[in-house]
Length: 580
Image (cartoon, rainbow, N blue to C red):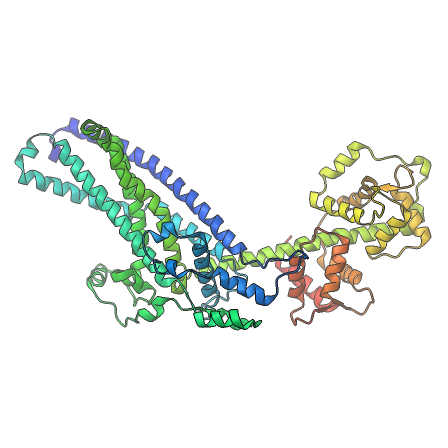
């Protein structure tokens, strides 16, 4: 550089400008990343909403829709109108596409994803496809925003070519070498670069949009019409309504990769392999096509950010002198590229995370986390059951121990300070559930329980009381001796025992006690519906679907009945899998 400029002061000035450029590149790059992240977060919400649509709705009675109606509802969610299907893969379609079409695409990709029997990982029917896509986007974004050495090499190679072009122009036109380069020449060169950057971004976006359209699973119209008209309940064969996308039939299997790019990569020592039908959609790049497009997205983003920095640091003044609108017009291509980047990342996710390019590591992560969530839900259910079992034991011990009876003259009402202290130590959901249990037996809605109502409540929890035991228990609970038990008095007795009994849960003991409560006739076998109804009576905060899933994991034969051995065995297995 010193040899070229011949002036060390000029060289220092150039380095000062370069430092400013690097600073502004950092600022604008961080700003661009924040924009991309916000768009990615919005996309996550959209995908999560689509995933939620797959949950079977319930009628006013709380019952799920019949299987036939549910399957018709899913078919409706997968429907794409012909007028929208014809323009799939175009640039404008990705921005003007209706919400229902995006939803239908999600449903089709998801069903096709689940139907892949040849995939190396077993995918459950309740697989969270939205979570999978979100994780894939996060992985891709982490690579896009991490500008490595190779990316800088590519960028500086472009700058070197521009520098060589500048020397060539000065050698062809000596008058330009004698003084400063005319402003209009510099601005014209910058404009050409901006146009090239914008055209490249648009063409890359268009290519990814086309690849996604080729990957979009089709619907077997004959099968759809048959199911909509026949009214059959159907079976697992319903998955065949989603058939292979276009690329499976249109792309042929390549036995050997050829071409100039393959020759260049072979000469440079880059290992290549035979591309799959999916990878052939990326054109002449073959098996390295997905990696090439990811690098392309990174360079579009970096090029746009560098262009904005150059415009703000170097060219803003000269352009302003020519026309005050020119600096703002010159910003448009780079800003468009910045806003195209997140959409390209989302398209790239569809193109490189489905069909033959599924990310097995991410699939395993999602499956493992879903299983962990289910185990945690089971643990929550068992913890709540432990709470109610503590109630049974504690109330029974108080009722059957006459020595615990208190002298009514020594009883005191519960102070506000005692009540506030207890509430602060207790899970709000537990307190809410306990209050609903209390209100369930408050027949006259007075806010207080008499002796008869307390006896009914305790018996519902699985303990039979004689009249003397019920009277003894009532006397203990009636802290102020008013002749009735309000919710504070009831909660103080029950929750005080719960908070005093903190520590590691013994799930095996909980399982035995819980089963004995449900097994009213002592046969050692209970029905799932009986358990659900009994738990609903004990408390209304139960996640009924979660409890049903819990019971289905135990009842592997699907008989609808659970014996004591398999019940306790399953709980022991849960205790082995989850550490406390």
